[in-house]
Every structure is written in C-alpha cells, then in structure tokens.
Image (cartoon, rainbow, N blue to C red; front, side, top):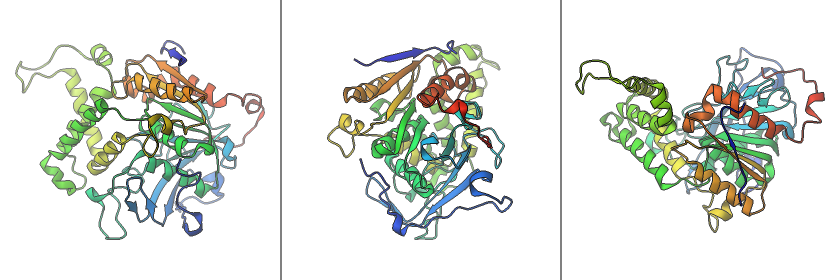
Length: 417
C-alpha cells in the first residue's frame, strides 16, 4: 500500500550516455566578451552547441542543437554535489539571479545560499528546454540545411528527447552522475524521463506536479488551447509576422489559467460583482481583467510555434513508450524519488502522482509522495510564498538527507553568484 504524507501551507532505458557518441562531438562555450577569467568561477551563463545529428524519439532528427544553460555555486564541485534543475513549459534557464543576469529567476526563492537548493553546498545547473523559445534550438532557429527558420516544420519532440538533450549537457561538462534531478510540471516530466533513461546518472529525483503519462483529460485541456492558436487567421500555418502577438495565443493562455489555478483561489481573490454598464460588451468582472493581463503578457513573450510544439510534447508524455507497458517503463527509475502533488491541481490531478508512486513502490523503489493543499493549484510551485513556506522545507530536507554530517562543516568561498 502506498505511503503518502499530506502537507498544508500552514505547515511551515536508452543508454547511460546519450546516443550521440563523443568521438565526433563538437562543442562550443560562447562566452560574453565583457567577462573574462576562470571558467568555473566567473561565468554563469553558457551555450552548448552540438554540431552533429540529434535523433529524436519519433523517428526524425535535428542536424544540430544549441542549448543555453546557467549555473550557480562552486563550479569545481564534483557531480555528486551537483543538482540539475529542469524548467517548465514557460520558463528559461534563468532559474535564479546571478552575476550575468541579476533579475529574479522563476525559482528565486528556492535556489541560492542557504535556500532549499543551497548553492553554498551544491553546484546547480539549469539548461533551457529543447524546443523552447528561450535559448534553445526551436521553431525560431534557422535550419542549417535550408537556411530558413524551422517555423512549423520543426519535427515533433517528446520529453524523452528533452531528457537526452540534458544528458548531453552533462556529457559536455564531464559529469557522469549528479546528486539530484529536480523539476516542476513539464520540468518534473523531464526529470522523470531523465531518471528512466539514465538510471545510473542520478542519486535522487524530485518531481513536483508531474506525471508519467498524460491522461486524456489533460490532452483535452491542451487541445482546446492549440485550436485557439490554429484557428487564428494571423497564425497563417506558422508563417505569422514575428513580434506580433496573436489573439489565439491570448485565448490559449486564458484557457490555461483556468486549469493552472483553482476556483478556490479565484472565488476568494476577485470581486464577485461586475463594473460598467450591464451589457455583454461592457460589464467587466475583476477576474476578466486579470485574465486579460496574463494573456497579453504571455502572448508578447512566447512564440506560437514553440507553444504548439511543447504543448503536444507534453501530451506525448509516456514512460511506457518502448516498454512492455507503463509500469515496466516507469520501473526503470531506480533513484530515490520524492513526488510532490497538489491536491487542487486541475491540470495534472493528484491521482496521477499517486499512481506514479504506487508503481515505483510496487517495484521496490524508494519512493515517497507528499500531498500539498494549496488554493494556487498547479501553479503552486511557482508561487513565492508557497516556495518559502512549503516546498523549500520539503526539498531541502530531501536533497540534504544523508549529507548532514558533511555539509555543515564545509566552507565554500563562492556563493550562488
């Protein structure tokens, strides 16, 4: 029987290596000329360029890939003191502030000296996601074989492809094995894929609000979002005007917000009474203004072709692909595993995390589920206060477990900067 903890906010196999052989690998670290000095101490942001064919799970390939990645902490630390952080759908490699980019990152409250992912003790690496508009080979990239941008012709990716790409970054750095791989939402899905494909390359796995196989209910959510984009005449089969936000993207984001958050939050947060003349064109509820703001902000930042690509990639999440069944495919994960689910999550319901942990425990894996109550729903792990009050203690205790006799006695000269 599965064992699970419940937490309230009130309580503070492909191969071990990537299929790309190192013998023909070309690598390049692109360094900003305004910086100089020791590679391991003065730089935070890099780009790995792998100029060789990258086969994809569904049968096609990319002639080359380029991935930006950032790092924090003492870069001389070995792999067993390295944590790999994987971004979600709408996030870049900028998980936390650093010298190169002092802007707060999307997990600012989780990564840094003394924080849950403690850069005084660990080296932390966060790569961009293959297919993302934020620093990775994607539909925005020029296809070296044609000289034109990929746009909608970009081959379909899966989370398995993303995981192999992350493994290539570690290969590039000479890191055979890391202490922890961690991610939330699509980042958690990538973490599960990494652990399944490369079971001997990590000690610990932490997945937040993630799943081992996308359910039809979640596919239905995303299908409507994609249809909103595809039905927009301005999309033009992927040949839209660059930099011009599409109305379809705004609708897709608004639909997303209804399953990323919860009714409980919306009902408590927003005024129940409209303002303006009582007509469908003019009567406006506060929640409508909020949705409009979120939609406009997102549509200015995210590329529609990348959105469609990554949305379908998440639908294709299935650890059982290539195995006898889902359970056998999931059982490839051998690392100690912490799964954190949100009981109010509408996008990836808590039952999916229960099923995941049930499978791992049935195969004798050391897996634990923590169920969190949060009115912020699926997006809870990106809420600053939830990060501080709930997720930080859970993550810190788990990744530092069994290291407590070592970490307090170490003195590192370098912080997360």
